[in-house]
Image (cartoon, rainbow, N blue to C red; front, side, top):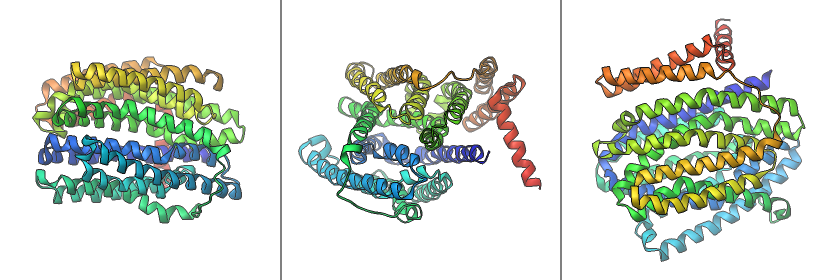
Length: 484
């Protein structure tokens, strides 16, 4: 019973963190786009996309592999210490090689050389993400620390942005602040994670055991980033910086909502791996089935709400010159369903069951399709073409991963879908009337969200949806405990 409560609490904490991921950009984006302009924002987005690939190379799939494998042996301190030292050592070696590669690419590729200063600043993120060992916090399900740390650092960063970034000439300063907001999370980890496992470096890397699954997971990470980030990079080569800036805002909104929906999946992965390590099939399937039902309850209304509010959201985040990006955001809404269930079948089923090969094939196929379609559709339709390719790429992943997961799961429990559909219909009606009757942008979004949530929740409860009933019981239990 305590374990179940722990997952619920961790899920809430991770959702709070992801909500902050929404709130902080909401506060700063409208300001920074007006101050820096779409061109400078495009330069930063391009540079950050390049650095994300370098970080992925330095990580080499180790975070995902470490969460899975260390979770399986966390009851054995000796085996756990040996495993973490091996993985950390591989990570450090790859970090050094990745930084050398970044230097060479910046020196010999003119487009990257133009952004050498921004890339040099953001390269700090490569070092900090390696030394920080953030996967240890996930292994021990310490989501309270992860949430608190994020909120504090992002609050400080937001204050720096609003008080120090004043003109278009402050792009370098803005890049330093963003590097701080990313890196300081991992710098704190250097001290914090020692409470769980001390640092250790070894040249006995045990590559025979680790290399094959790590390479698979690394290729999965790169291929996944290709169909997430390649659209921005290819836009940077074919379209002006201003269009890259517009699309980056729509893409960031999509990524934030996707991360929010994936938050429940992420907190369950260490527990799923632990159940598999203990051969506890009953709890494994119970957790998977409940997780799947929760996703259905949240993802469909999220897609509908974001579709109707996309124009208003971009109008708040950015000036009028960015407004036409709402069409791309509406296209990306359809990718949310595929992306979230792709994460479910890949991260919660295939990877914990050590079947990363199927996930690898799915991401490789989708990445190839994405790059090819980007080169065709971006010259034709610009940022809307980039959005369409993302939808198709996410669809390919979920189809292959779901098919590959069939032998790894039992029959999932069925869920009443009619209340979900009726609740979604009410959201469409509420958003339509709010847009027609409320002139204020902020009030329109606020009332649309509040009344949509209340209406949807009430319809689910009337339809006796088990996820809604379980959530209500949890809230009632919390209130009773506080009264005592």
